[in-house]
Amino acid sequence: MNKRNYQKELERVIEGCQKEGRVPRLLLHSCCAPCSSYVLEYLSRHFLITVFYYNPNIYPPEEIRKRADEQERLVAALPAGHTVTYLEGSYEPERFYQAVKGHEQDQEGGERCFLCYRLRLEEAAKEAKAGGFDYFTTTLSISPLKNAGKLNEIGEELAKVYGVPYLNSDFKKKNGYKRSTELSREYGLYRQNYCGCVFSQREMESKG
Image (tube, rainbow, N blue to C red; front, side, top):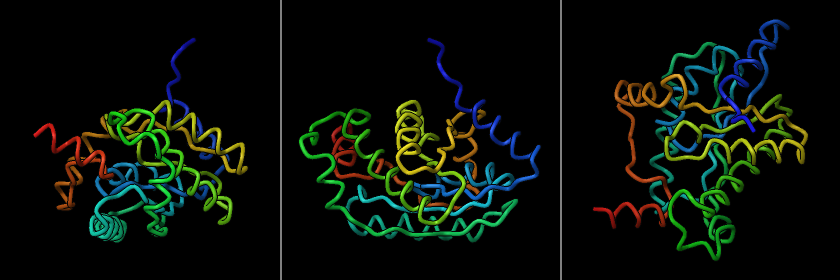
């Protein structure tokens, strides 16, 4: 079976919207400002975006505020092709710990992370349905450490459940990750050195 090219799939959606003269509404789940920087620069030319910051995995509690404040600051500062607005979800760490129960010892990038992807994407799908959005997606695929195939698989499953199309993507393509690091420097963004949860923090610290 051929490996899917999610970047090409995204480009086909964009081309179709352009031919129809449409600027669809997109709910963009974001994990942090640095990861969203390139994604917003790229997609705001083609979509009306609401950045949805929902990350119950983040630890410690003060870290969620740092990341959320930076996300909101970037949305206000970054020049955008079309309007970008900001929406902050509730901080519900108990939902994360319940979702990954039994997987506390998994290696970073394994099943625990997939459960975390699903938790955050499902909340985004619910929000997209409630808000009447045309698409939903996430910035998570920009990271070289995140499994784009799994993210898109989960997104497509949730799209069927909630009736809102998932915008397939692999934002690290076309130098997306490189551009995100450039924009992070340009805007002086707070850039953390671990994914976000207590387990990823411990793994990072153990590697010294």
